[in-house]
Structure formats: C-alpha cells, structure tokens
Length: 429
Image (cartoon, rainbow, N blue to C red; front, top):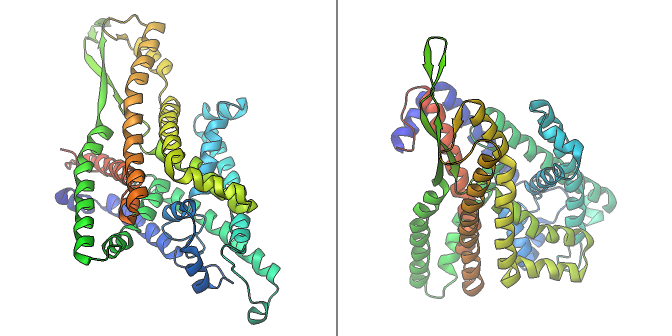
C-alpha cells in the first residue's frame, strides 16, 4: 500500500491529479466552517444540539456544516436528489430516455438539467431551513438594529448564500471528476463523513461516567469496525463470471477465434449508490418538513429517520435501488448482441434471446444477496445506536462505513489503473 502511494507520486500527471483533488476537498472543508452572514452563531449552535435524529443525520452528510449554518449547509444532497429524479425520469419521460442513449451529447443535456434542478431544490431547502431555524424550536432572531439592515434583506442574503454554496459544491465535485481522481460527488460525501470521526471518538469516550469504560467501549467499537472491513471489501469485489467461448473461423489466411473468456458481473454492481439514494429518500421528508414547518410532517420525518420504520425502509430502498441502478448501468441485451456479433456464445445457452434471459437471471440472482448484505450492514449499526446512543457507532455506522469503503475502493481502482499505464504495480495484488 505505502509503496503504491509512493509510486503514485512518482508519476507527475497522477501526482498533480491527487494534489488537485486534495486541494478541492480542503476548500470544501474550509467552506463548512464559514457561517452565513447575519446568523447569531453561538445561539444557533446551542439550539441545534437539541434537534431531532433526522437533522443530526443530515448534519452528518454535510460534515457538520448544517449545525454551524455555514455557506455549505445544504451540502451535496440537493445534487444527489436531482440526480435520482433525472435517472427516474429516464424511464418515465421518453425525451430524457432518448438523451441517455445519445452518448456524450445526450449526457450533457442530462447534466445541464440536473444542475438546474439542483438549484431549484437548493432554493426550496434554503427557504425551508431559514423558516425552520426562525421557528420557536430554534428561535434564531436577527437583531435589526445591530446589523443596520432590514430583516427581510438579511433573509434574502442568507437564502442566496446557501444556494451559491450548493452551486459551488456541485462545481467542485465536477472539477474533481474531470481533472482529479475518483468521483467528485462521492469524495465530497466521503470527506463529510470522515470529518466527523474525531469528534465522535471523543464523544464515545466521554459519554461514560467512567473514562476507562468509555475508552474500552471505544476501542471495542473500532476493533469491530476493522474486523468488518475485510468482509465488506470481499463482497464489494466479489464477481460472478459467465464463461464465453468464441468459435474458430477463417478470415483470409488467418484462423480467428477459438478463445475462452468470461463476463465479470459484480455481486454489488451498484456500489454505494443504493445507500446514498436510500439515505436521500429517507431524509428528504426532513427537508420538506423544514420548508413547511408543520408539526405532523416533522414528527413523520423523525419517525422514519430512526426506529423500526427507518430500518424497514432502509432495507427495502437499498434492495430496490440495487436492482434499479444495476439495470441502469448494465444492459443484458447489448451484451448478448456484442457476444453474438463477435462469434461468441455462452456454453449450454442458445445465442440471442436465450442468452439475454440467462444474463438477466444471473444478474437478478446475484443482486439480491448483494443488496441484502449492504442493507444489513447499514441497518445493524442503526439498531445499536438506538440502544446505546453512542455517536461513534453512528459516525462509523453501516451507511457511513459502506460509503467510505466503497468510495475508497473506487478511488484506489482509478489510481491503480493510472499506475499500470506507467508499468507500476497497483494497490490490489
């Protein structure tokens, strides 16, 4: 691992990409500590400590920016929600579905509309948070005399500052994807989650009256987490290989074909996307509740943000999005057509429609256990948190650790592919 990192920094192009990515992530973390203008910071921070579970989880995905009411308080969630909506629209609106099949030009249209939708959702969230934080629950009041400007003008400035923060995060994520290493949006979420770990460790130690017991519990949690990492990596990299044989054929004076290969189908082809999508769907009512500030909607968002309903919804949504996203990124019909065009066949399966159905059946069989595995990993820590109230379990919870490991593996794979271009060994031996 260390030698691979050293090799990565030996390659100038790769070194520049890594440093560029780290610089953008550092800028993102800086923005999480810059409060929006006009907010009484100390009073707001004290009142936020008594917020519900839903707001605490939203704060986790923003890296603590929401609890500070910083310029990045909305985080990356509006963009992810917009991405989910646009992907769902591909199967509902024919025009969007055609864009998805038009290659690069169509993808540019989808990306552009995703940006527009992100700004609309950011506007809704910004207004909602402002109304929520001005309610009796948080009681954030602007002192008109000391600020020297009308309250309505301060509210407008706050709203547009939050929207600008969301647009800036979206821009930084796209910069990382285009000019850095890894997926920018995933790395931003990874950075947000990992930034809460030090404070969670401190909270885990001090939550016990006996400091020695707190240290022992914290060490035990960390050991369990470390023990689970190899199992998660094993499932993340597990494959079901479909064998493909190519018949021999004569082309001119050369004998072509006669080779055997395989189609690698990952058990968890969707990666961490189902968890991110499921989290967005579950905590979206909390964002809507912030906008309308209605008691029953707030109670509903808190009810599905923790407890039995949260666990059931998490499992169902993760399995659903595992199937949904796998169907989006892998096309059995296209794969079967390519095999047939190249003179290949799956042993024991007729070419054409039978091959398509066979590949679909294999995908369905391996996606279910893969989806259930990540669902269990995501839900079990939430159950433990409900009984122990230990913040370290929440910070290192199933959703968090799966996102962190998934993003880390994806980033390492991209670095490894770059290293192999320069005849270096990668991370995975």
